[in-house]
Image (cartoon, rainbow, N blue to C red; front, side):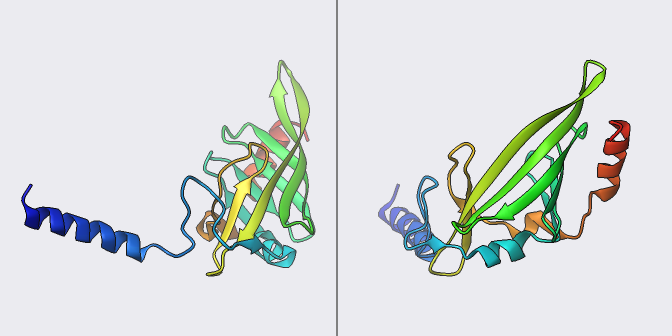
Length: 161
């Protein structure tokens, strides 16, 4: 590789690194200088919205604290409650109902996420059930309203709930 090509390559890498926000982290760590996200901010991020999870499932976070979930295979529903703690955690507690062996069984499950806000205002979260890495909160994965209400009702009726 010629000295000119090497210099151009190094300049390109340097410009990419310089463009990264100051709060960037390595290997899923908490952003430097991040503070607990106020509970009311977390509430605003979720209340009245449907989350479209990476796994293919969905969750509706009703403004009154009711939780409705649909699993990724679209054959089970979660019915329960959600809340935000004073320690910046979003949790849902639900019974997940699924048909198994000719009967509908309910499985209680609780999931929680922790939230922090970086100095630049970016909200970060991590899934606590698996001690997951920190990642940026993606507002685009949530939409206003209960967009999966029809599917939730259909699955619930199929299960006899």
